[in-house]
Image (cartoon, rainbow, N blue to C red; front, side, top):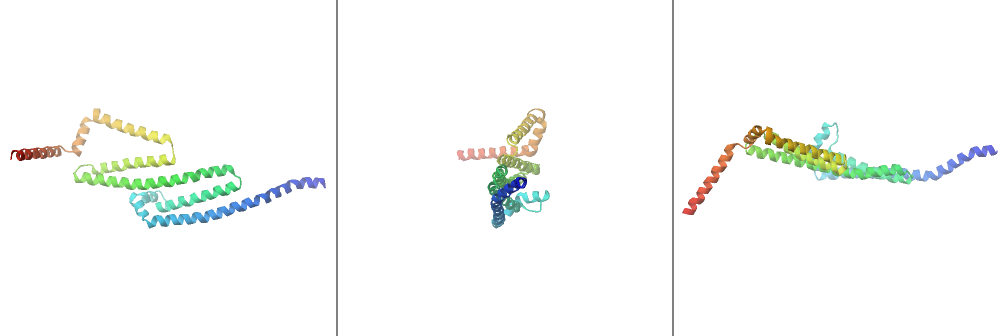
Length: 243
């Protein structure tokens, strides 16, 4: 009999602990169900709200939707915002559920994800607005260069577009802390190298090329026309004073 009690004592202890743990499991499951329903509702609200303010028009004109489709995604940027909002609520529900179960390590890990998702949403918003602004600047440069009959208008427009996008991507990466100081310093080193290379090319080895490029973009006849116009203005002022 004593041997039977010795064998049954661990089983009894396990059943007692399981009985004490079952309410926590039930509460965790309840929190997951409530969180899933709330996440679905938040996703629906976010997508409907963004489409109501014609946010999809901005994402389409900025090129974000085309970029996602080229990457193999069947959803657009608006759905991506809704998906991120969904997982934000789900991660928060998982944090509460795991916290009720006493799983501290999982709670800390999911808590970091809860803090990271809002940064990711804000970075995606910055990328969308920045891509739209980059296209606007590129189109403005293209129209201005064509109005002045400057050659290589497409190249200058593309250069302006990629220049703005580089700064926008740098801001987004810095916001999400992806890469940290390494990405920022690498970008600054590359930018400094490009500027130094251009300065050396214009100042030393590429004088003729630089002069030809400047002559191509701003021909001398424009300078002559400008000087002639200034001369005519001076003559008119002189005649006007004499009269």
